[in-house]
Length: 486
Image (cartoon, rainbow, N blue to C red; front, side, top):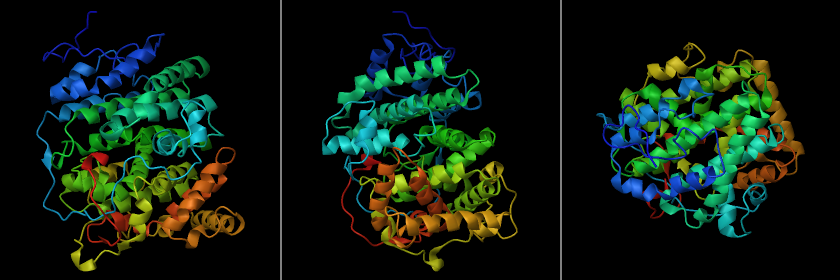
């Protein structure tokens, strides 16, 4: 079989794949086998990998980006940056004290049903863990009742497909589902093209999901746990981060759930970044030990030369205030859902982390301009406010009455709902069974999940910022773990 060379593949012939090739959006009977083969060849590619090989993976005719053209080139350009001089992390304190990170550990039994609607697996603790952490990463973050049912299972299948690369270092029994997962990804692509309009959001969402597959596949090929270094363009890295975490795809889905559609591509990325921040704040301590450059706090600190917590907190507060003022509740839903999903995952032990933190020592905190990152400022939907150090969300809102209405509605729900009762007063560890109850109810009604998520953003984030702050200390149980678990 001849393999066409891309214009920039002078360092060798192009690498023939289905995922990066020209025919992904014209799937045929052989596409699932070729997608599965792309995953199985990861060990071979890792052995031979050098940064310039990224150009050999991307066929210039790849259709990924057809419906999300503003971000089409981000994965390849970020990959190319690996071959250029990068920035080393500045001489700043790092948070490294944290609970142990696990591999696949099942928290409960509420999510296997969702996965087995598309991917048949046995009822065992391992597959419950996979259902929670891989398939459930997408399913837990969207309203499966408002969105097209086939698109929900299709995007969840892409999330599972991504996991073969994302969890490459410890995927255990997961390869047993690779062939059927590749089949479901192919069916998702075919469904979107057959059943949804050419100008519909469903095609853009599918595009964003496949872009995440590109990015995650590239991530596992690059050396991991090496040393803390960051690519050269902060804005591009922000755009890449919300792609490789699938936050852009999930944010587009959250917006489609609620409607009407407001916000341009930069607004989508701003909201998606706030969602990734809720994940990265908890992960920061583990990521620092693993030299993980794509943690938001790491790359913002690298580019600004200053501790990033205050700048990122300022940005998130402003984005959520914009959301309240514009009735864009989806912006809070996606961020809150991502945080409580991470709290639910036994693998991460985020509930243990958040419950065992001491507040930051004010004498150890550097004075930082909260608007000190011009790249974050360029994505911020609000102009700088008169009180940069005031992070109270209500203070930043123009429509304080709506903020208060949302908060009162959440508190009323916590009084009246048996599954959510007392959420506002509970520790993070005691919130875990309430989150599971919301997932059990989510098959038919997402109301409980959104009450938990909205309240978390409105009134329950102090310890999230502590988790990211190197001046805060973790005092709970810990233990040895592998940096490959990040």
